[in-house]
Amino acid sequence: MTTDPLTPEYSHTQTAPLCLILYAPALLCCAVGLGVGDTPGVFVAVAVGGVLALFGTAVHHLTVEDRGDRLAVRFGPLPLMRTAVSYADIGAVEVGRTLLLDGWGVHYSVRGGWVWNLWGRSCVVVRLRNGGTLRIGTDDAENLTRFLETKTGERGA
Image (cartoon, rainbow, N blue to C red; front, side):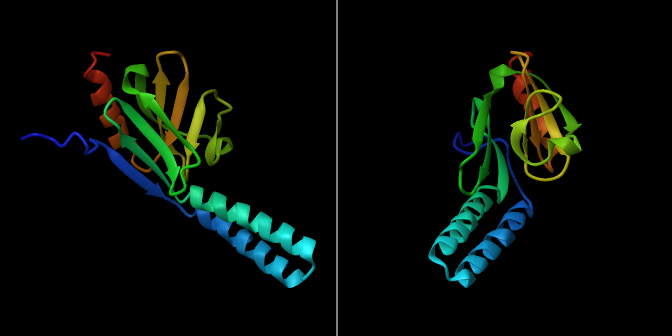
């Protein structure tokens, strides 16, 4: 049985209500702006609401997907934030938990390394061969860890 090279071996999309936290104030800003009636006030309120709504569409979900020689991580559906790590660069993986301070989004962790997290505290800790760390927040941590162990084990790591 042959596998389709275009079909990823691993693909998981996590959804979360984070976008709703951004949509609510976006709607409020637009409503207040339209209610103000003052041209500069309307412009400012609608602009702030638009930016919040735009960012909300960027954090509807977090997709982690096999791309053959690398693992791709991206928020969406508006792809403002995305990254990829080559399987050859991965030294070790383990199931972990993010700190409350790590929060959501993309940022540097107080423990060192980058955090990509949409919701919750479960994550896969990816230790890179160059000494870096990547924490990928997911509600599928065990399966992602097993998949990455398989991919890195194929190289004899």
